[in-house]
Length: 582
Image (cartoon, helix red, strand yellow):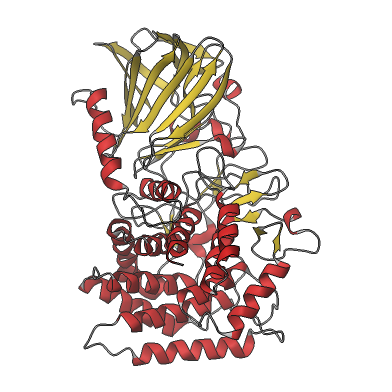
Protein backbone atom coordinates (compact mmCIF):
# COMPACT_ATOMS: atom_id res chain seq x y z
CA UNK A 1 0.00 0.00 0.00
CA UNK A 2 1.25 3.59 -0.61
CA UNK A 3 1.65 4.23 3.11
CA UNK A 4 4.26 1.45 3.06
CA UNK A 5 5.86 2.40 -0.25
CA UNK A 6 6.28 6.00 0.87
CA UNK A 7 7.45 5.92 4.49
CA UNK A 8 8.40 9.17 6.24
CA UNK A 9 11.87 10.64 5.84
CA UNK A 10 13.97 12.95 7.99
CA UNK A 11 12.62 16.48 7.71
CA UNK A 12 15.66 17.92 5.97
CA UNK A 13 14.68 15.98 2.82
CA UNK A 14 11.27 17.60 2.37
CA UNK A 15 10.50 20.58 0.15
CA UNK A 16 7.45 22.86 0.18
CA UNK A 17 5.18 23.89 -2.65
CA UNK A 18 2.79 26.70 -1.69
CA UNK A 19 0.43 29.17 -3.30
CA UNK A 20 -0.71 31.17 -0.26
CA UNK A 21 -3.94 29.26 0.26
CA UNK A 22 -2.42 25.84 0.95
CA UNK A 23 0.87 23.97 0.74
CA UNK A 24 2.21 20.61 -0.38
CA UNK A 25 5.14 18.88 1.33
CA UNK A 26 7.10 16.77 -1.14
CA UNK A 27 9.61 14.06 -0.29
CA UNK A 28 12.68 12.57 -2.02
CA UNK A 29 10.70 9.83 -3.76
CA UNK A 30 8.63 12.50 -5.51
CA UNK A 31 5.72 11.89 -3.12
CA UNK A 32 3.45 14.70 -2.02
CA UNK A 33 3.26 13.47 1.55
CA UNK A 34 1.10 16.23 3.04
CA UNK A 35 -1.43 18.61 1.53
CA UNK A 36 -4.68 20.09 2.82
CA UNK A 37 -7.40 21.29 0.44
CA UNK A 38 -8.85 23.79 -0.10
CA UNK A 39 -7.23 25.71 2.80
CA UNK A 40 -4.27 25.35 5.11
CA UNK A 41 -6.48 24.21 7.98
CA UNK A 42 -8.77 21.97 5.93
CA UNK A 43 -8.61 18.20 6.10
CA UNK A 44 -5.63 16.64 4.38
CA UNK A 45 -5.96 14.96 1.01
CA UNK A 46 -2.40 13.56 1.01
CA UNK A 47 -1.11 12.38 4.38
CA UNK A 48 1.69 9.79 4.30
CA UNK A 49 3.78 12.22 6.38
CA UNK A 50 1.65 11.36 9.42
CA UNK A 51 0.93 7.74 8.56
CA UNK A 52 -2.02 8.05 6.18
CA UNK A 53 -2.36 6.50 2.74
CA UNK A 54 -3.24 9.57 0.65
CA UNK A 55 -0.37 10.32 -1.73
CA UNK A 56 0.53 11.72 -5.16
CA UNK A 57 3.92 10.48 -6.32
CA UNK A 58 6.15 10.66 -9.39
CA UNK A 59 9.10 8.31 -8.80
CA UNK A 60 11.82 6.87 -11.06
CA UNK A 61 11.30 3.20 -11.84
CA UNK A 62 14.96 2.24 -11.41
CA UNK A 63 17.31 2.88 -8.50
CA UNK A 64 18.21 6.52 -7.98
CA UNK A 65 20.05 9.10 -5.93
CA UNK A 66 17.91 12.09 -4.94
CA UNK A 67 18.62 15.82 -5.06
CA UNK A 68 16.77 18.99 -5.80
CA UNK A 69 16.69 22.78 -5.70
CA UNK A 70 14.36 25.75 -5.84
CA UNK A 71 14.38 28.04 -8.82
CA UNK A 72 15.70 31.37 -7.48
CA UNK A 73 13.18 33.57 -5.70
CA UNK A 74 10.32 31.10 -5.91
CA UNK A 75 8.68 28.00 -4.50
CA UNK A 76 9.10 26.21 -7.82
CA UNK A 77 10.95 23.06 -6.83
CA UNK A 78 12.93 20.69 -9.06
CA UNK A 79 13.22 17.14 -7.83
CA UNK A 80 16.33 15.64 -9.44
CA UNK A 81 17.17 11.97 -9.65
CA UNK A 82 20.32 10.33 -11.01
CA UNK A 83 19.11 6.88 -11.99
CA UNK A 84 21.00 3.87 -13.33
CA UNK A 85 20.56 5.09 -16.90
CA UNK A 86 19.23 8.66 -16.88
CA UNK A 87 19.20 12.09 -15.32
CA UNK A 88 15.59 12.99 -14.53
CA UNK A 89 13.98 16.11 -13.12
CA UNK A 90 10.41 16.79 -12.11
CA UNK A 91 9.53 20.46 -11.97
CA UNK A 92 6.96 20.99 -9.23
CA UNK A 93 4.69 23.88 -8.23
CA UNK A 94 1.28 24.87 -7.06
CA UNK A 95 -0.17 27.21 -9.70
CA UNK A 96 0.34 30.77 -8.48
CA UNK A 97 -1.52 33.06 -7.89
CA UNK A 98 -4.04 30.69 -6.38
CA UNK A 99 -7.75 30.19 -6.43
CA UNK A 100 -9.13 30.04 -2.86
CA UNK A 101 -11.40 27.10 -3.67
CA UNK A 102 -9.09 24.98 -5.82
CA UNK A 103 -5.49 23.81 -5.87
CA UNK A 104 -3.68 23.21 -9.15
CA UNK A 105 -0.64 20.93 -8.84
CA UNK A 106 1.79 21.29 -11.74
CA UNK A 107 4.34 18.52 -12.35
CA UNK A 108 6.62 18.51 -15.40
CA UNK A 109 8.75 15.39 -15.93
CA UNK A 110 11.96 16.21 -17.85
CA UNK A 111 14.38 13.68 -19.34
CA UNK A 112 17.70 15.55 -19.23
CA UNK A 113 20.02 12.67 -20.12
CA UNK A 114 18.61 9.34 -21.24
CA UNK A 115 14.96 8.30 -21.27
CA UNK A 116 13.02 9.00 -18.08
CA UNK A 117 10.93 6.09 -16.83
CA UNK A 118 8.74 6.98 -13.87
CA UNK A 119 5.89 5.40 -11.96
CA UNK A 120 2.96 7.59 -10.94
CA UNK A 121 0.52 7.03 -8.09
CA UNK A 122 -2.47 9.28 -7.50
CA UNK A 123 -4.37 8.28 -4.39
CA UNK A 124 -6.26 11.21 -2.86
CA UNK A 125 -7.96 10.59 0.48
CA UNK A 126 -9.77 13.64 1.85
CA UNK A 127 -10.77 14.29 5.44
CA UNK A 128 -7.43 13.28 6.95
CA UNK A 129 -7.35 9.96 5.09
CA UNK A 130 -10.98 9.09 5.89
CA UNK A 131 -12.56 9.51 2.45
CA UNK A 132 -11.70 7.03 -0.35
CA UNK A 133 -11.40 7.77 -4.04
CA UNK A 134 -14.71 7.24 -5.86
CA UNK A 135 -16.61 8.11 -9.03
CA UNK A 136 -13.65 7.64 -11.38
CA UNK A 137 -14.25 8.56 -15.01
CA UNK A 138 -11.99 9.05 -18.05
CA UNK A 139 -13.16 11.44 -20.76
CA UNK A 140 -11.16 13.37 -23.34
CA UNK A 141 -7.86 12.24 -21.82
CA UNK A 142 -8.79 13.60 -18.36
CA UNK A 143 -9.54 11.57 -15.27
CA UNK A 144 -12.17 12.94 -12.92
CA UNK A 145 -13.31 11.68 -9.56
CA UNK A 146 -14.24 12.56 -5.99
CA UNK A 147 -12.96 12.11 -2.48
CA UNK A 148 -15.19 13.33 0.30
CA UNK A 149 -16.61 16.72 -0.70
CA UNK A 150 -13.69 17.40 -3.06
CA UNK A 151 -13.67 16.88 -6.81
CA UNK A 152 -10.56 16.44 -8.92
CA UNK A 153 -9.49 16.47 -12.55
CA UNK A 154 -6.19 14.97 -13.68
CA UNK A 155 -4.50 15.46 -17.05
CA UNK A 156 -1.41 13.82 -18.48
CA UNK A 157 -1.97 10.15 -17.69
CA UNK A 158 -4.83 8.84 -19.86
CA UNK A 159 -3.18 5.41 -19.83
CA UNK A 160 -3.39 5.19 -16.02
CA UNK A 161 -5.34 2.29 -14.65
CA UNK A 162 -7.55 2.19 -11.60
CA UNK A 163 -5.91 0.02 -8.99
CA UNK A 164 -6.41 -1.24 -5.50
CA UNK A 165 -3.37 -1.44 -3.29
CA UNK A 166 -4.46 -3.00 -0.03
CA UNK A 167 -7.94 -1.56 0.40
CA UNK A 168 -7.11 1.82 -1.11
CA UNK A 169 -8.34 2.86 -4.55
CA UNK A 170 -5.83 4.72 -6.71
CA UNK A 171 -4.77 5.61 -10.23
CA UNK A 172 -1.49 3.99 -11.32
CA UNK A 173 0.65 4.69 -14.37
CA UNK A 174 4.12 4.20 -15.80
CA UNK A 175 5.39 6.87 -18.16
CA UNK A 176 8.43 6.99 -20.42
CA UNK A 177 9.67 10.41 -21.48
CA UNK A 178 12.26 10.34 -24.32
CA UNK A 179 15.61 12.00 -23.79
CA UNK A 180 15.36 15.76 -24.26
CA UNK A 181 11.55 15.77 -23.96
CA UNK A 182 9.17 16.71 -21.16
CA UNK A 183 5.73 15.62 -20.04
CA UNK A 184 3.15 17.55 -17.99
CA UNK A 185 0.80 16.27 -15.31
CA UNK A 186 -1.86 18.69 -14.03
CA UNK A 187 -4.04 17.92 -11.02
CA UNK A 188 -6.92 20.23 -10.13
CA UNK A 189 -8.62 19.50 -6.82
CA UNK A 190 -11.01 21.50 -4.70
CA UNK A 191 -14.57 22.38 -3.88
CA UNK A 192 -17.36 22.82 -6.40
CA UNK A 193 -18.08 21.42 -9.83
CA UNK A 194 -15.21 21.35 -12.35
CA UNK A 195 -17.25 22.61 -15.29
CA UNK A 196 -14.70 25.09 -16.67
CA UNK A 197 -12.10 24.12 -19.31
CA UNK A 198 -9.11 22.13 -18.00
CA UNK A 199 -6.02 24.09 -17.02
CA UNK A 200 -3.49 24.44 -19.84
CA UNK A 201 -0.11 23.38 -18.47
CA UNK A 202 2.00 25.75 -20.55
CA UNK A 203 -0.10 28.77 -19.65
CA UNK A 204 -0.19 27.81 -15.97
CA UNK A 205 3.59 27.46 -15.84
CA UNK A 206 4.15 30.85 -17.47
CA UNK A 207 1.69 32.53 -15.12
CA UNK A 208 3.29 30.89 -12.09
CA UNK A 209 6.81 31.85 -13.16
CA UNK A 210 5.73 35.46 -13.72
CA UNK A 211 3.87 35.66 -10.41
CA UNK A 212 6.91 34.50 -8.44
CA UNK A 213 9.20 36.81 -10.39
CA UNK A 214 6.93 39.75 -9.57
CA UNK A 215 6.19 38.63 -6.02
CA UNK A 216 9.70 38.22 -4.58
CA UNK A 217 11.88 41.37 -4.47
CA UNK A 218 15.60 41.22 -5.33
CA UNK A 219 16.72 42.00 -1.74
CA UNK A 220 20.11 42.93 -3.18
CA UNK A 221 21.04 44.95 -0.10
CA UNK A 222 20.65 41.99 2.27
CA UNK A 223 23.44 39.75 3.48
CA UNK A 224 23.31 36.62 1.27
CA UNK A 225 20.56 37.98 -0.95
CA UNK A 226 19.72 34.62 -2.54
CA UNK A 227 19.14 32.99 0.84
CA UNK A 228 17.14 35.99 2.03
CA UNK A 229 14.95 35.71 -1.07
CA UNK A 230 14.36 32.06 -0.25
CA UNK A 231 13.02 32.98 3.18
CA UNK A 232 10.90 35.74 1.67
CA UNK A 233 9.44 33.26 -0.83
CA UNK A 234 8.54 30.92 2.03
CA UNK A 235 6.76 33.73 3.89
CA UNK A 236 4.99 34.77 0.70
CA UNK A 237 3.90 31.21 0.05
CA UNK A 238 2.51 30.87 3.58
CA UNK A 239 0.42 34.08 3.28
CA UNK A 240 -3.21 33.63 2.24
CA UNK A 241 -5.39 36.06 0.31
CA UNK A 242 -6.91 37.06 3.67
CA UNK A 243 -3.52 38.48 4.64
CA UNK A 244 -3.07 35.78 7.28
CA UNK A 245 0.25 33.91 7.32
CA UNK A 246 0.19 30.41 8.80
CA UNK A 247 2.92 29.50 11.28
CA UNK A 248 3.79 26.32 9.34
CA UNK A 249 2.36 24.05 6.66
CA UNK A 250 2.18 20.93 8.81
CA UNK A 251 0.80 19.51 12.02
CA UNK A 252 2.15 17.20 14.71
CA UNK A 253 5.78 16.92 13.62
CA UNK A 254 7.52 16.29 16.96
CA UNK A 255 9.92 18.72 18.55
CA UNK A 256 11.27 15.81 20.57
CA UNK A 257 10.43 12.14 20.04
CA UNK A 258 7.83 10.66 22.38
CA UNK A 259 7.63 13.75 24.64
CA UNK A 260 4.20 14.98 23.54
CA UNK A 261 5.61 18.26 22.19
CA UNK A 262 3.93 18.19 18.79
CA UNK A 263 1.24 20.65 17.76
CA UNK A 264 -0.86 21.90 14.86
CA UNK A 265 0.72 25.04 13.40
CA UNK A 266 -1.53 25.51 10.36
CA UNK A 267 -2.97 28.68 11.89
CA UNK A 268 -2.05 32.35 11.99
CA UNK A 269 -0.18 33.35 15.14
CA UNK A 270 -0.42 37.11 15.70
CA UNK A 271 3.16 37.20 16.98
CA UNK A 272 4.58 35.32 13.98
CA UNK A 273 2.63 37.50 11.56
CA UNK A 274 4.05 40.60 13.25
CA UNK A 275 7.58 39.19 13.00
CA UNK A 276 7.06 38.69 9.26
CA UNK A 277 5.67 42.20 8.85
CA UNK A 278 8.58 43.75 10.72
CA UNK A 279 11.03 41.72 8.61
CA UNK A 280 9.28 43.04 5.50
CA UNK A 281 9.66 46.56 6.86
CA UNK A 282 13.36 45.93 7.46
CA UNK A 283 13.90 44.95 3.81
CA UNK A 284 11.64 47.71 2.47
CA UNK A 285 8.91 45.41 1.20
CA UNK A 286 5.38 46.88 1.27
CA UNK A 287 3.51 43.68 0.38
CA UNK A 288 4.11 41.41 3.38
CA UNK A 289 4.05 44.44 5.66
CA UNK A 290 0.66 45.46 4.29
CA UNK A 291 -0.77 41.95 4.52
CA UNK A 292 0.32 41.64 8.14
CA UNK A 293 -1.20 45.01 9.02
CA UNK A 294 -4.45 44.07 7.27
CA UNK A 295 -4.86 40.77 9.13
CA UNK A 296 -3.66 41.87 12.57
CA UNK A 297 -5.49 45.19 12.39
CA UNK A 298 -8.75 43.44 11.56
CA UNK A 299 -8.41 41.11 14.55
CA UNK A 300 -7.74 44.05 16.90
CA UNK A 301 -10.73 46.00 15.63
CA UNK A 302 -12.95 42.93 15.86
CA UNK A 303 -11.83 41.61 19.26
CA UNK A 304 -10.04 44.47 21.02
CA UNK A 305 -8.36 43.51 24.29
CA UNK A 306 -9.77 40.01 23.83
CA UNK A 307 -7.72 39.37 20.69
CA UNK A 308 -6.64 35.74 20.65
CA UNK A 309 -3.00 34.71 20.12
CA UNK A 310 -3.93 32.81 16.93
CA UNK A 311 -6.70 32.46 14.34
CA UNK A 312 -7.52 30.41 11.27
CA UNK A 313 -6.39 32.02 7.99
CA UNK A 314 -9.95 33.29 7.51
CA UNK A 315 -9.90 34.99 10.91
CA UNK A 316 -12.02 32.44 12.77
CA UNK A 317 -11.31 30.86 16.14
CA UNK A 318 -8.77 28.04 16.24
CA UNK A 319 -10.57 24.74 17.00
CA UNK A 320 -9.89 22.70 20.11
CA UNK A 321 -7.12 20.14 19.96
CA UNK A 322 -8.03 16.55 19.06
CA UNK A 323 -6.46 13.44 17.55
CA UNK A 324 -7.23 11.80 14.21
CA UNK A 325 -6.57 8.10 14.70
CA UNK A 326 -3.56 8.08 12.34
CA UNK A 327 -0.13 6.72 13.35
CA UNK A 328 1.48 10.17 13.19
CA UNK A 329 5.05 11.02 12.19
CA UNK A 330 7.45 8.68 14.05
CA UNK A 331 7.93 9.94 17.58
CA UNK A 332 4.84 12.14 17.38
CA UNK A 333 1.08 12.10 17.40
CA UNK A 334 -1.68 13.08 14.95
CA UNK A 335 -3.05 16.23 16.54
CA UNK A 336 -5.13 18.94 14.89
CA UNK A 337 -6.46 22.09 16.54
CA UNK A 338 -4.46 23.93 19.17
CA UNK A 339 -4.91 24.83 22.81
CA UNK A 340 -3.58 28.32 22.08
CA UNK A 341 -7.23 29.23 21.59
CA UNK A 342 -7.58 29.38 25.38
CA UNK A 343 -4.55 31.57 26.10
CA UNK A 344 -3.78 35.23 26.71
CA UNK A 345 -0.41 36.39 25.35
CA UNK A 346 0.48 39.95 26.28
CA UNK A 347 3.45 40.13 23.94
CA UNK A 348 1.11 39.69 20.94
CA UNK A 349 -0.29 43.16 21.68
CA UNK A 350 3.21 44.60 21.96
CA UNK A 351 4.24 42.98 18.67
CA UNK A 352 1.06 44.33 17.06
CA UNK A 353 2.03 47.85 18.18
CA UNK A 354 5.52 47.36 16.75
CA UNK A 355 4.05 46.16 13.46
CA UNK A 356 1.58 49.05 13.17
CA UNK A 357 4.29 51.55 14.12
CA UNK A 358 6.52 50.17 11.38
CA UNK A 359 3.68 50.63 8.91
CA UNK A 360 3.24 54.22 10.11
CA UNK A 361 6.96 54.86 9.66
CA UNK A 362 6.72 53.41 6.15
CA UNK A 363 3.81 55.75 5.42
CA UNK A 364 1.27 52.99 4.78
CA UNK A 365 -0.85 53.05 7.97
CA UNK A 366 -4.36 54.30 7.21
CA UNK A 367 -7.09 55.48 9.58
CA UNK A 368 -8.22 51.90 10.27
CA UNK A 369 -4.63 51.02 11.14
CA UNK A 370 -4.39 53.90 13.59
CA UNK A 371 -7.68 52.79 15.10
CA UNK A 372 -6.23 49.30 15.58
CA UNK A 373 -3.08 50.80 17.14
CA UNK A 374 -5.14 52.75 19.65
CA UNK A 375 -7.04 49.59 20.56
CA UNK A 376 -3.79 47.67 21.07
CA UNK A 377 -2.37 50.44 23.26
CA UNK A 378 -5.53 50.47 25.37
CA UNK A 379 -5.35 46.69 25.69
CA UNK A 380 -1.79 46.93 27.00
CA UNK A 381 -2.86 49.60 29.49
CA UNK A 382 -5.71 47.41 30.72
CA UNK A 383 -3.96 44.03 30.82
CA UNK A 384 -0.19 44.44 31.24
CA UNK A 385 -0.27 43.35 34.88
CA UNK A 386 -2.12 40.09 34.12
CA UNK A 387 -0.14 36.85 34.02
CA UNK A 388 0.05 35.50 30.46
CA UNK A 389 1.20 32.39 28.60
CA UNK A 390 4.20 34.19 27.11
CA UNK A 391 6.08 33.63 23.88
CA UNK A 392 6.66 29.93 24.62
CA UNK A 393 2.99 29.32 25.52
CA UNK A 394 3.50 27.65 28.86
CA UNK A 395 2.04 28.43 32.30
CA UNK A 396 0.56 31.86 33.03
CA UNK A 397 3.06 34.11 34.78
CA UNK A 398 4.19 37.74 34.63
CA UNK A 399 6.76 36.99 31.93
CA UNK A 400 9.45 39.63 31.57
CA UNK A 401 9.63 39.29 27.79
CA UNK A 402 5.88 39.93 27.44
CA UNK A 403 5.98 43.10 29.51
CA UNK A 404 9.09 44.52 27.88
CA UNK A 405 7.65 43.79 24.43
CA UNK A 406 4.49 45.67 25.40
CA UNK A 407 6.64 48.62 26.48
CA UNK A 408 8.62 48.47 23.24
CA UNK A 409 5.38 48.63 21.26
CA UNK A 410 4.19 51.69 23.17
CA UNK A 411 7.53 53.46 22.61
CA UNK A 412 7.44 52.66 18.89
CA UNK A 413 3.88 53.96 18.60
CA UNK A 414 4.89 57.19 20.30
CA UNK A 415 7.81 57.64 17.90
CA UNK A 416 5.61 57.00 14.88
CA UNK A 417 2.77 59.22 16.09
CA UNK A 418 2.03 62.01 13.60
CA UNK A 419 1.53 65.65 14.48
CA UNK A 420 -1.74 66.18 16.28
CA UNK A 421 -1.51 62.96 18.31
CA UNK A 422 -0.15 63.04 21.82
CA UNK A 423 2.28 60.21 22.60
CA UNK A 424 2.83 61.31 26.20
CA UNK A 425 0.56 58.76 27.83
CA UNK A 426 2.08 55.92 25.79
CA UNK A 427 5.60 56.90 26.77
CA UNK A 428 4.61 57.29 30.41
CA UNK A 429 3.00 53.84 30.44
CA UNK A 430 6.06 52.31 28.74
CA UNK A 431 8.35 53.88 31.35
CA UNK A 432 6.12 52.60 34.14
CA UNK A 433 6.05 49.04 32.74
CA UNK A 434 9.84 48.94 32.33
CA UNK A 435 10.43 50.38 35.80
CA UNK A 436 8.02 47.96 37.46
CA UNK A 437 9.48 44.99 35.58
CA UNK A 438 13.01 46.09 36.41
CA UNK A 439 12.18 46.30 40.10
CA UNK A 440 11.08 42.65 40.12
CA UNK A 441 12.81 40.86 37.25
CA UNK A 442 16.48 41.86 37.26
CA UNK A 443 18.99 39.42 38.74
CA UNK A 444 21.53 40.61 41.27
CA UNK A 445 24.12 40.10 38.51
CA UNK A 446 22.33 42.68 36.39
CA UNK A 447 20.55 40.62 33.72
CA UNK A 448 16.84 40.33 32.99
CA UNK A 449 15.26 37.20 34.46
CA UNK A 450 12.39 35.26 32.96
CA UNK A 451 9.84 36.33 35.60
CA UNK A 452 9.82 37.70 39.17
CA UNK A 453 9.62 34.15 40.53
CA UNK A 454 12.08 32.66 38.01
CA UNK A 455 15.62 34.00 37.94
CA UNK A 456 16.59 31.92 34.91
CA UNK A 457 17.66 33.25 31.53
CA UNK A 458 15.62 33.12 28.32
CA UNK A 459 16.49 33.64 24.66
CA UNK A 460 13.37 35.76 24.26
CA UNK A 461 14.97 38.41 26.49
CA UNK A 462 17.38 39.29 23.68
CA UNK A 463 14.47 40.70 21.68
CA UNK A 464 13.27 43.71 23.75
CA UNK A 465 16.47 45.75 23.23
CA UNK A 466 16.21 45.08 19.47
CA UNK A 467 12.64 46.41 19.60
CA UNK A 468 13.49 49.49 21.67
CA UNK A 469 12.14 48.57 25.10
CA UNK A 470 15.54 49.47 26.54
CA UNK A 471 18.68 50.81 24.89
CA UNK A 472 21.39 48.68 23.35
CA UNK A 473 23.94 50.18 25.75
CA UNK A 474 21.74 49.71 28.81
CA UNK A 475 23.74 47.69 31.37
CA UNK A 476 20.86 45.21 31.61
CA UNK A 477 21.08 44.60 27.85
CA UNK A 478 24.78 43.84 27.95
CA UNK A 479 24.52 41.71 31.10
CA UNK A 480 21.66 39.67 29.63
CA UNK A 481 23.51 39.06 26.37
CA UNK A 482 26.70 37.98 28.13
CA UNK A 483 24.91 35.72 30.61
CA UNK A 484 22.82 34.17 27.84
CA UNK A 485 25.89 33.40 25.74
CA UNK A 486 27.59 31.79 28.73
CA UNK A 487 24.70 29.67 29.97
CA UNK A 488 22.29 29.03 27.08
CA UNK A 489 24.56 28.46 24.09
CA UNK A 490 26.71 25.45 23.25
CA UNK A 491 28.98 24.90 20.26
CA UNK A 492 27.62 27.98 18.50
CA UNK A 493 23.94 27.02 18.89
CA UNK A 494 21.31 28.87 20.92
CA UNK A 495 18.64 27.44 23.21
CA UNK A 496 15.45 28.96 24.64
CA UNK A 497 15.87 28.32 28.36
CA UNK A 498 17.13 25.60 30.65
CA UNK A 499 14.59 22.82 31.16
CA UNK A 500 16.71 20.81 33.62
CA UNK A 501 20.34 20.29 34.66
CA UNK A 502 22.67 18.69 32.14
CA UNK A 503 23.63 19.39 28.53
CA UNK A 504 21.19 21.76 26.85
CA UNK A 505 20.71 19.58 23.80
CA UNK A 506 19.39 16.66 25.86
CA UNK A 507 16.19 18.56 26.73
CA UNK A 508 15.36 20.01 23.31
CA UNK A 509 16.95 21.12 20.08
CA UNK A 510 18.67 24.39 19.42
CA UNK A 511 15.96 27.00 18.82
CA UNK A 512 16.65 28.57 15.44
CA UNK A 513 14.71 31.76 16.13
CA UNK A 514 17.08 32.38 19.04
CA UNK A 515 20.11 31.84 16.80
CA UNK A 516 19.07 34.59 14.38
CA UNK A 517 18.08 36.88 17.26
CA UNK A 518 21.52 36.24 18.74
CA UNK A 519 23.14 37.43 15.51
CA UNK A 520 21.10 40.63 15.57
CA UNK A 521 21.76 41.24 19.26
CA UNK A 522 25.51 40.93 18.80
CA UNK A 523 25.41 43.20 15.78
CA UNK A 524 23.42 45.79 17.73
CA UNK A 525 26.18 46.10 20.35
CA UNK A 526 28.94 46.29 17.74
CA UNK A 527 30.26 42.71 17.92
CA UNK A 528 29.98 42.27 14.18
CA UNK A 529 32.33 39.35 13.55
CA UNK A 530 30.61 37.31 16.24
CA UNK A 531 27.24 38.29 14.76
CA UNK A 532 28.24 37.06 11.33
CA UNK A 533 29.49 33.75 12.74
CA UNK A 534 26.16 33.23 14.47
CA UNK A 535 24.33 34.13 11.29
CA UNK A 536 26.25 31.59 9.21
CA UNK A 537 25.99 28.81 11.78
CA UNK A 538 22.24 29.25 12.26
CA UNK A 539 21.61 29.69 8.54
CA UNK A 540 23.16 26.29 7.89
CA UNK A 541 20.71 24.50 10.22
CA UNK A 542 18.49 23.24 7.41
CA UNK A 543 18.37 20.70 4.60
CA UNK A 544 18.98 21.05 0.85
CA UNK A 545 15.65 22.88 0.27
CA UNK A 546 16.75 25.69 2.69
CA UNK A 547 13.63 25.31 4.83
CA UNK A 548 13.83 25.85 8.58
CA UNK A 549 11.92 23.95 11.24
CA UNK A 550 11.51 25.22 14.77
CA UNK A 551 14.44 23.35 16.30
CA UNK A 552 17.72 21.79 15.23
CA UNK A 553 19.05 18.66 16.93
CA UNK A 554 22.74 19.50 17.13
CA UNK A 555 23.92 16.00 18.02
CA UNK A 556 22.15 14.32 15.12
CA UNK A 557 22.21 17.35 12.77
CA UNK A 558 18.48 16.90 12.19
CA UNK A 559 15.53 19.28 12.00
CA UNK A 560 12.74 18.99 14.58
CA UNK A 561 9.19 20.34 14.68
CA UNK A 562 6.75 21.62 12.08
CA UNK A 563 7.91 22.67 8.64
CA UNK A 564 8.64 25.32 7.49
CA UNK A 565 8.54 27.46 10.63
CA UNK A 566 7.49 30.95 9.55
CA UNK A 567 8.91 32.86 12.49
CA UNK A 568 12.38 31.40 11.87
CA UNK A 569 12.26 32.51 8.23
CA UNK A 570 11.03 35.94 9.37
CA UNK A 571 13.92 36.37 11.80
CA UNK A 572 16.35 35.12 9.18
CA UNK A 573 15.04 37.77 6.76
CA UNK A 574 15.21 40.56 9.34
CA UNK A 575 18.73 39.52 10.32
CA UNK A 576 19.79 39.56 6.65
CA UNK A 577 18.69 43.20 6.46
CA UNK A 578 20.13 44.31 9.80
CA UNK A 579 23.51 42.66 9.28
CA UNK A 580 23.83 44.26 5.86
CA UNK A 581 23.38 47.68 7.44
CA UNK A 582 25.80 46.92 10.26
